[in-house]
Each structure stands twice: as C-alpha cells, then as structure tokens.
Length: 157
Image 1 (cartoon, helix red, strand yellow):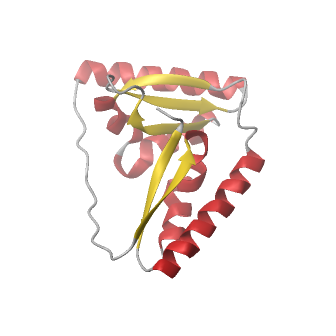
Image 2: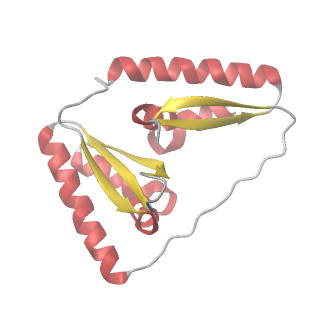
C-alpha cells in the first residue's frame, strides 16, 4: 500500500511517549545502518497461507534462513495489494546471500505447496486506557522488531 506499517501503542501516556522515543531512536539507527534503497535487494510474492510455514514456529525457520544465507529477510504483514492474498518477502544483502536466500525460500515453498497446509493466525487483544500509533516504513520494520523480536520486546517492557 503506502510503504508503511502501523505500530499500535497502548498504556499510560508517559509509557507511550517513552515507547515512541525508543522507536524513533531505533529507526534512526536502522536508517543509518541500511542504505535503504539496496540495488541487490529482491522482493518475492508469497501466498498468505504459506507465510506461517516460512516463518516457522516461534520464528525459528526464518531465523535459520537468515543465519544460513547471510541475507536480511523481512516479511510484510499486509497483503501486497488490496485485491491480492500475497505477502511481500524482502531479501537484501550481498548479491550471493540474496541469491542463496531466494533459492532456499523457493525450495521451501515448493515443498510446502506439495503438502498444501495452511497456517493459522492469532489475534492479540488489548484493553488499555491509552492508545497511539506510529507509522514505520516497510524497509525498517524488521529493525524495529529486531532479531527474534528482541528490540520490540524490550520496548514493550
């Protein structure tokens, strides 16, 4: 859609303000580290029902893919277009790492299509007194979430 993701914050106002500041700091560091428009980057469209398999239980599969290939792999949370069920998988890094990651993902999706299993999704509900949102560019959302969700978990505490 517009190249940004919405991060929902809820809790006491001072906590929200602190979280926003931490998010801004994380994003500015991320912008410095990533030459955001990477010429080696590759985007794959993956059917929504295969994304769960690509991520794996507790993010293990995607973590292993990143470690083995050496590439950075980010999966968009929203469908690529409003009339599509596909999600975008962004792969970036050195060309050989990007190619290796692409091959690994293609093989994995091929095996998944043979099995044709669908992944479930979970909905997290929150009933906090105050809420706020922060728009985060797609290419930086992975940095905000962090390895294994560590960065966003530390912001949530």
